[in-house]
Length: 514
Ligand code: FRU
Image (cartoon, rainbow, N blue to C red):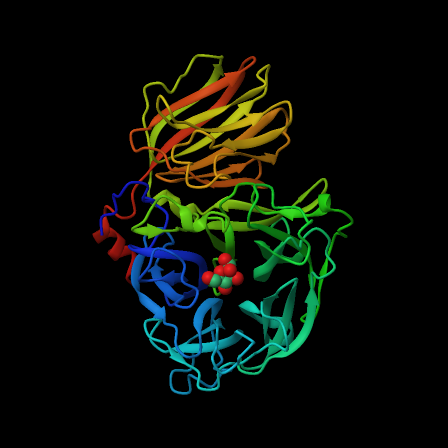
């Protein structure tokens, strides 16, 4: 596989052909990270009647090997989003000979045995490291009373109560269920129906996990993740996510095996915590069972937005993932916040392109004038001076540029993709996206991942994140460091090339196979 088509992501996962949306079934097992995903293998548009779980594996989260689709639709309906776990203690009874194996828990959409209740939860198991799956004959394992939106089961083993917990999106709330064996589920509690400002769209793809606050093993908090769709919610007057369309929220709190209780009350929409201030980070969920001794909580999202997902100007494939990221909880003056960082494994494909230190950036002088790149990483620290705005222009040509900057007056990090290239496929695409970011000791840090069709910016300590797709011409590879209305001190800048994970396919296979 040597992916060189126009706009093809070079170090983000995309299927060779056709449609993908949400990551599904993220699990690490016997040396492999599995990435299943919503996939229509025969069409570049989403076909909700024929949704499969696509499949790829990696040993390092960088090099991916695409495998045949794992779960095909049938009379039980198509295969919507869900999760996968390692059943180490054979609680399911599927692994009497092997002792343990993989179990997938997913939504069947349009199950013919459940007329009028199209979404039910089913399970399947694999005894060969996820290569082949058997659907459980007792499916479905959970079906609704009335609601039509009843989906995206994310399951984990809750140590404290020794049972499985499922988080499920049920229209305007998350419902938690528990089970001793993955087959029988009991309702535990609901969360969200009365959380104001979150109901413009329906809830989708919840995830619940614990993290140590500030890395302190004695201080544990639970994080509830939520994707909120673009419309069909119960309150059309509720606010859109910061960049519009579909977006993601999180809550930090406690979970006792039964009930999730947020730590900070939500009195107004200003108390809501958005995960990403760009337009293209959705349905992100975390890997279960990360390797012993590693302890990181890792996740990946779909780099797209339901508002225009089917209109992206690629047709051989449509949709790709974000970079994998590590999640942490850190205490700030205003509370405990979720922090995202690019995973350290990117060291495998980094090579230095340029470094700068202690340079004053003046208006109309561009220290990067001799460098070209259409994929790269920028790690920068600025010290504020008189400039009102400063930052980078990337994927630049005479007619195109994507601006990644800091507005020193409004104290906002931003990505402006108004003139980034192809924007004509949807009226909302050409836009500027902003994230609040206060300088620390007059300094602003940003780390930028740029690929052939995307930009991911990690601002400050990793709370100000902007993820956006862009569709520039391949010739638009100029770079600029800019300052407007005064100057700014660039304390340090490291520009790294990030190697293609596809053009070295043999290497990819070597990394992906164990
Ligand atoms: C989220 C979502 C899920 C659903 C899947 C269908 O993007 O709408 O709620 O399971 O996509 O492909």
